Amino acid sequence: MSTRAEPYCLRSRLSWRLISMQAVLLAALVVVLIGALCASGILLVPRDEDHVIAIVQRAIDRDPQGGLTLRPTAELKELRENTPDLWFVVRDRQGHSLSEGTVPPEFARIGDALDQISQARLGWQLFEDDPRKPPARMKRVNTDAGTVQVLTATQGPLSGARTVVATALAFLAVALPGLLLMAAATFVATPMVVRRAFAGLDTTADEARQIDFRERGSRLSADHLPREVAPLVTAINDALKRLDDGYSRHQRFVADAAHELRTPIAILNTRLESLPASPERTRLLEDSARLATLAEQLLDIQRFDQCRNPFARVDLVAVARSVAADLAPLAIAAGYELSLEAEVERVEALGDRAALERALTNLVQNAIQHGGRRGTITIHIGRPATIDVTDEGNGIPSDQRTQIFDPFYRLAPLDRGAGLGLNMVREIVRLHGGDVAVLDGPTGGAHFRLTLPPASNAK
Image 1: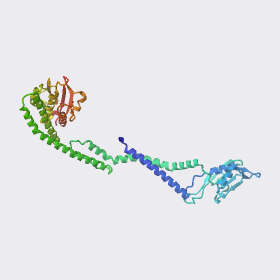
Image 2: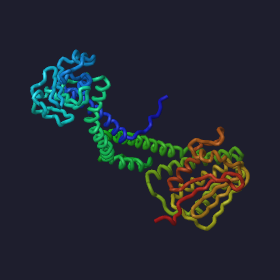
Image 3: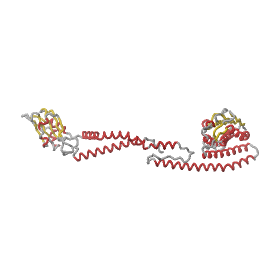
Image 4: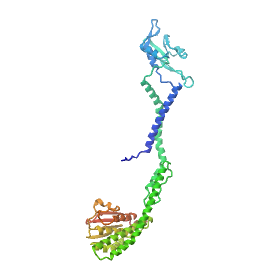
């Protein structure tokens, strides 16, 4: 079973991926740059002249004549063996000096010029002089022979830890400030770029929200959208076109089927009326009337869908009287009394009279079929524009009051009918801008209420 991927923030993902890529590229650039400088001799490996100075410091001593000498310490011996280019110069303030190795001429002539300096690094201009000339380190230290000055350019061995630390410091000094600057710029610029690039998506989303399935020909605009998003909008428009074509074919089929059903239903009704009076004849007439009503309701829905606003002022009291007159014989034959109640003489609503008559007819026929064949079926017209149909049957369970309006849904599996009547009623009422609801009946039976837009709200 595939898991559903969670939505993600494009701005955040782009920002972090850009920063990661920048960090990798910057690190690679620093490594290449340092390697190139080292290979060219412009940048030497980190120096450790202090290591040499410290070994020499511990080996300095005085000879019997008061001059400077070196004790043959083990670490000095090791330094001499491991450092072929070892050189250093040691001087004190009395003018004594000693040296070892080949001292570069430029440093050999310094003499006492730096006697007042405690420590210094003597080097060269990076791009004007020979980059292979190492700078020298001068430091005044305390020894067994007193305070002396040690000058050397020899690099002592770097430990692995110090090498790592030196490399890390070089990276931090060069790369980290740049990475922080680019990260800050990325976090600021990426949301702005994404927001401006996808600004047209909000307009397209609003267009999509306004699409109604009854309005064919709606398409999403691809203007002001990135090219990367345009294929998605094109695919959605293609899907909308296929839906329009399928809906049109469905409409034509339903309308043609409803027209074709009219004639056989009329013939069936005529033949049923010619049968001798009996309970079975009454039931067949009820079913035939429901079929006729359903066919007409299907045509009403197709007609409304093609003509968006065919409504006018309709007197609901007159509609109820017409329905009651037409269905009174069926209701009486089925064992009911049919009652019509109106709060006032005239209640006007906006709608199509024929369609509203068929919707009300459907509700009364539903009461005749499911009302238990006893008691009274009441049609009540209220203000501002409501129609209530109640019976004294077993009613509708509260947990099924929403489902009964679904197509082909029936309270009892073996119940008569196709389960389309109430769905047709709901569609017609919705096309009128109204609503149909199931309430608790005053005597426990079914109670349907149609609420329609009153004519007084018309402009």
